[in-house]
Image (cartoon, rainbow over the protein chains, first blue to last red):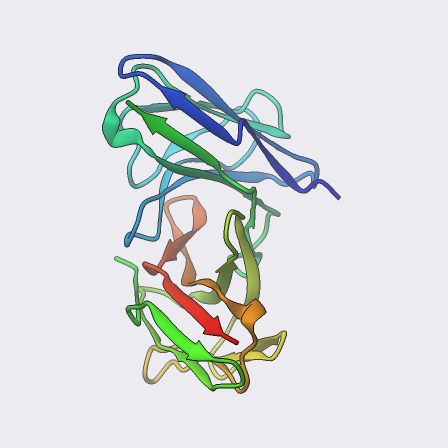
Length: 114
Length: 114
């Protein structure tokens, strides 16, 4: 079972460059999420989606955009990368229903902005 | 708003020692509670969960009891192994806007020495 797959796994960018992180899930989940993980801060929600064609802002959305054109894919874009966006990015998905359904996480994308 | 406070690490133990990681929460509703584990270089994996007061979640020798009166969900294991070395995250899921979002603690790094 692939579960949640993130590509790429590592990336180094220069300030001002743009890139897109791809998240794909094969569990037919409705809900998908993008987080960033920084030392001592746990995971913080960037954007999320409650279904195909929908997106919404999370806790730290500035500097990021997302799209959910297909149910299985959730893309995170950085239009003009900044050093403050150096982080580990995690995608997650979960089934519908109530809050007792756990989120399933990918292995992360380690992004460095120089 | 919702928040999760975890015992600060890092925690270093010898094999077969007893492990406790404290977790307390603040929530406006009736959240579900989770412990996730992150092994080096990997994403988060669900370790255990509890969905209502007095529920006990358990998995791989770990246990945590949902204590509503003390708003706590402490993680315990009676005899740790080197393979338990990881970062542990306490999290709660509660309804916010149109989705059940996760709020994470900062994480506790546990190192078990042989």
